[in-house]
Image (cartoon, rainbow, N blue to C red; front, top):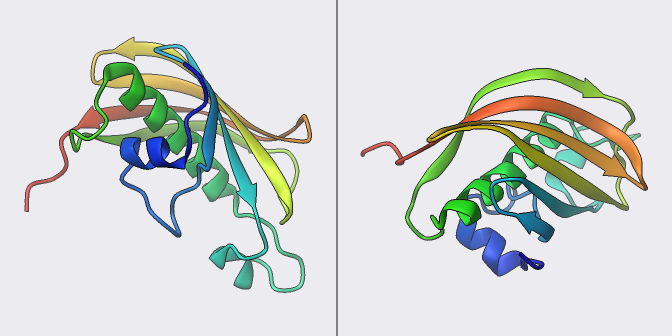
Length: 149
């Protein structure tokens, strides 16, 4: 599939500002892989406190960006956009943070589907900045209906 703009990303994910961490999708191969982009700006709300004198994007948000990319991959692959289905984290394994992510960079988020067991999938993801590895992890997610009120 070709690039997906922010409208398609927002149709696939329930996340909104300030938690939406995918700006566009450059490449999506259904049931295989996705490459997404996030522009990191000094206006991100987390930079106010992490850290005021040296702004660094929290590692947990790098993992969240990978998870959101996998959510777009799953929803688009299965034709679930607009159905209300959610992609929930089940496990995060071997998360490693290789370099700090500072304002003014583009994150290249690459996620591959490693194992597909219907509603439960395993993924491997990495975040690159200028072609250099910033973070990587493996994780498991489940596609399910949102909780009932």
